[in-house]
Image (cartoon, rainbow, N blue to C red; front, side):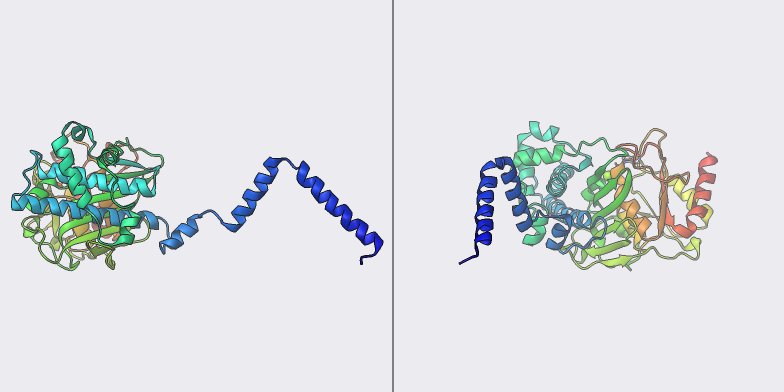
Length: 410
Ligand code: AMP
Ligand code: MG
């Protein structure tokens, strides 16, 4: 039995507790219980999400992983479209294989971006207008999109799994209409860069880059027809007849300030990556320079004149797409020249964003023909620049000097 004063104290506190419970407003009780729930089940923090996928806290690691897998998945679709074309089984619609591959790859990539980063914007080449009015084309592309799956469940989960239905595919396509600009997170996407190369069985690339406040932070290039071996030097045959041979297909990537890598393209999870660097070029006369196959895309005449002035004796290597950026970044070639063919054409950001960060991280410099940094912050085009010159850092000024001489003499 408790002594009398203590018993009184106990009875008094019980009375006070009952009084408090009956008089505290219910809102406060709800808040207290929510607080207790939060203590027991903390909300997923960025760190928890990173841990779940074994991410560390390296900048843009999640973005890089998503972009690599999304590009890898899209290349499965483009390869399938090409195979169907070469077997002559692509007869269900009147559309060209490029149209089918372009729409399909863009839908797959944007769906993955929107799954992981719903409020990010995308600058993509295509929109869904044509597909809304062409049912045959729409259902054909929808079939291919459904079949394009990575054969690794975890990798698919990172991408948000398959697109739900044909309507969701159109919504994804339409999400590529961003006007670009200097503010916020904007992805630049070229689902099939080098369409002519794609058609002729030459080089093409699936290109994706993330820009933050107008600066390219992450770049990924899927090049299904490049040889896996980084050491294989370019030869003039690289632009043709590369299609789907064994041992072909490379995924290049870079994050600003973190270096560039290459890895073989696979059908599932990512292959092991290797760091890539441009080849140190002691003697510029020994350089291998790359240019577009299409004479309409860059001035072959000006480029030949520049090469001659630099004392370069080797024939140029002509190849379509940003595979040119990828090839010089891994030292398979040395220079990429893209001199304008017209006064009015404005280069598109999706034709350069990924390549520029990959070459930069591999030890190169990319500017326009006048030596000006490429400005990705203006909108969908590089309207502040003319042409592109990419070279190893140490010799870039020498190349620009000659480019300006040649342009000035016209
Ligand atoms: P490439 O394969 O390097 O020749 O570049 C292919 C890209 O060239 C396409 O994605 C087009 O956006 C772009 N393009 C189209 N017309 C022109 C032009 N007149 N000058 C430069 N690039 C162009
Ligand atoms: Mg393109």
